[in-house]
Length: 241
Ligand SMILES: Nc1ncnc2c1ncn2[C@@H]1O[C@H](COP(=O)(O)OP(=O)(O)OP(=O)(O)O)[C@@H](O)[C@H]1O
Image (cartoon, rainbow, N blue to C red):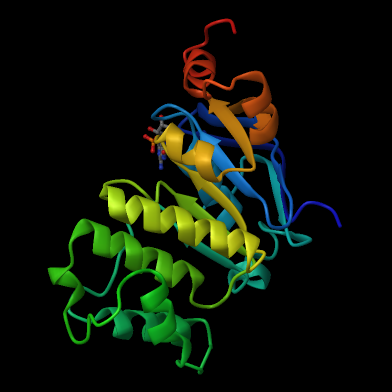
């Protein structure tokens, strides 16, 4: 089987500025792909292009064999995502938010909601409104929404931002389980290099909208047993390795 996600020379220009520039990425079934880059490198824009939320200026995105630009709806139910800060119905509970999301996707079976809330560490939130949730609770609900419909792919833009150490560990274990037990293919962007190091199978580093380096975590561990921090920071800052 070929890659589940592939971009070919993906390019996006805003107001004459090339924000994504001939970006080509391939991600295989069940892989966790860590997506790294400094602020403004183009990570969120690439993820939005993958989701069909933006149209490429040039190049293409293929997901599960579908050209996303031509056929976004064909893949909508197969992808779960968190892009930027998740937006919810603030006056409703976690359960109600997930129930609306399932209805939006045309899924009538709501029996998965309680189990999903437990799996992300949000059991017993009952009728508590989302407006009363902490940042960490919102991130957990964001993950719940991204996984509730059992997608084959999850695109997660900085999902561990602002989480406490317990929540970061919970998130790590959850993402590993989603990939290894459920076979979900995950792209995760983060600035927390040590977390990416712990969960990713492969890493791509983007600078000025272009992938400047890709490596497997196993080769990184072999070649840099001290960890990837120095290596990646040197790459990001344009220094020679
Ligand atoms: N809608 C837009 N219009 C104009 N410029 C945009 C738009 N969206 C993003 N950009 C610009 O594109 C560049 C890349 O932004 P993007 O959000 O993809 O970076 P990022 O790697 O996700 O950064 P961060 O780590 O800060 O989230 C930035 O210079 C940003 O200002």
